[in-house]
Length: 121
Image (cartoon, rainbow, N blue to C red; front, side):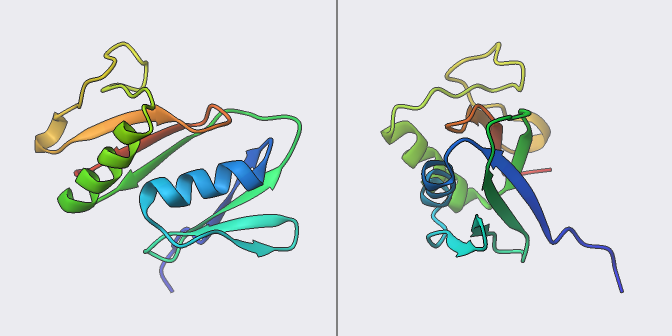
């Protein structure tokens, strides 16, 4: 058997806000409840399991998208007026990074986790 990531827990202050934010922005199905969590399923079988917690350690989550999907997600990001950056240090606001022949942008989720969408690893 190969080694694959199955899921990770995303600590958040309000899973009813954070999980739908990600699912909607990425154009994924609505999150589904599982025990105390809300599950966002990605197309490669990995899930992000949102779990309410008062203590948040900020994390970074990166999503590899094809070019048409990147365009759709970026359009939703822009339509919501969300700030975005071309770098994880947030030094290049409102820019798209074209490193490695692809495109990538960084933005925050409702809890401050740094999310990234990219077309090339």
